[in-house]
Image (tube, rainbow, N blue to C red; front, side, top):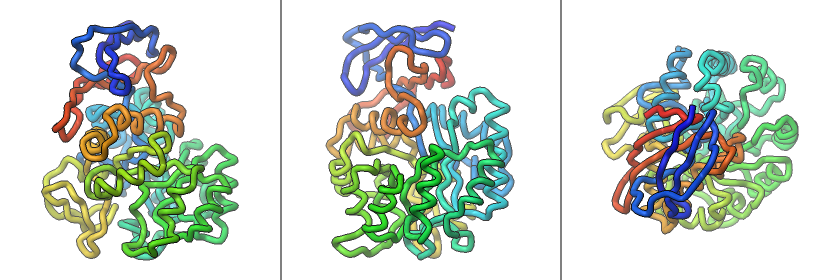
Length: 379
């Protein structure tokens, strides 16, 4: 299949004509100077729990739910994403991993869109605050034998694990998984600064939604946030929804990590896109979805994930932090692409995974015109 797409590259401002053939970018040439639509690599989201009623952490997850979620993500401009499972019993984790694996096998689109699964837990801090909305009864230390059971159930589909490095056996676990090509991300933790640096030395390469999943009160210095900002071996992911991090905090954190070591994630949950109200979910149990999109646990007030899509996060960064639209797009394409084997750039030979959208100052989100996977439109 051959087709051509036009648009302006948000990182350079140049107008492009991108020619696609056999699912890949075949050629790129200069486009018309009056082009108004933006053309970018397809968005890559490393943390998706669910969206618009589709819940990957549901007790009754089905193949159809995974398929539905993937197509809903395409409508938001996301062409690659990591299904994210949170802290739960091993029985439930193994079951849901196997269903996601079966969904990929049954659907070539999902096989392309889902390179691996992100396990956020269960090896996280048990304390209120760092644990966030994760269920305390299923928090447990890292266990390589359990990891092997995850991989056996899913056909080696787990590619990223978020954990707290405060456990005595954490460095050995990190080394063992890193040797297998698994990316370790530090999050939902009350670890010391020394434990953060030890984890990075052992092979950890990411921080999960930095600034969140920590205690409400921390020492001014040292603390685990400063340690992760200072640690150049760690690339940090951020939830840029206006609720998880104030604009000033987000701005300073990205400056500290630099644009090249910063990634935007959505941390979307199944309530995103639904009507405000009180709900009961596996993530946070009884939660309150506020009219402004803030999602909190009713009993504690802790955040229970995000309801803002990655396209919302890009617009938020471009409007509120001083970083450009092109830099925001880079943090949602090329940077996460390094961790999932996707280029996340527009270049000859790359997969023709692209998104066309409209945006200008004052827009609260990207208006998606077309989502393209392997040269085929899905919007």
